[in-house]
Every structure is written in C-alpha cells, then in structure tokens.
Length: 139
Image 1 (cartoon, rainbow, N blue to C red):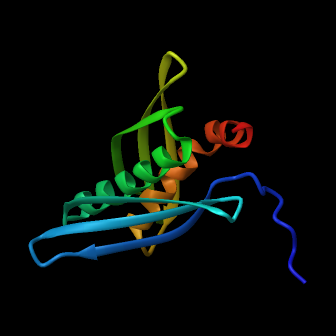
Image 2 (image 1 turned 180 degrees about the horizontal axis):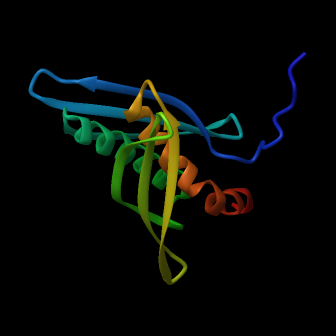
C-alpha cells in the first residue's frame, strides 16, 4: 500500500538527461510533472565544460517551468555555480522572475556529490517551488 503524497499540488521533477556531444557541446533535457497528468519538458544546449553543463541543465529546467506557468510568469537564469562547502558540493542558482507588473530575484540550492548538472536543474525547481505552488493550484 503506497503512502499518499503530502504535497499533491506541487510541480515534480520527473526526468533528467545530459548528453555530451562529439562537437564539444552538451544537451540537457528536464521533465516536470504536475498532478501526475500534465507533463512539461525543457531542453538546453551549451558548452561541454563543468560550468557549461550546469548552465545547460539549469536552462532546460527554466524552459520547462515556462511551459508550466503558461506565460503567467517569466524566468531568466541569472547565474549558476557549484561550490564546495561542508564536505559536499552545493549547486546555487539565481533567477530573475517577471510577472504581475513586478520583478524580483529568487535563489535556490541543491546539495549533491554525484551529479552536479542534475543538481543545477533541481536547484532551479527549489528556487521556484514557493512562488509556483499557489499559481499552479489556482489555474
């Protein structure tokens, strides 16, 4: 018997792939779900370097989020960085958020030791979950 989800109205991280291409670039794909029935997919492409892969993965999540909010808000990836702290790697993202006639910044983070590009995508989702919860629920 499965336990019911305590947060059924939350946007969920469902899929992540990162391909390193032979031309020195990378391509990331992020899949998000909402209410187990709606799916949103974003892709990003960038340089196949440590910083490039982080940005590529974070941008793919930003694109998927844009589909989820259907133009109600817009997100811009301002920066992404992996830092070593407390014997672990923390991926931090900064996003610009525009909507309802105003703009502000949000920051998200994700603690990881194995897959920093995936951590960048999850940090984007962590940065936006609070502001997206009510907006998605009300549509």
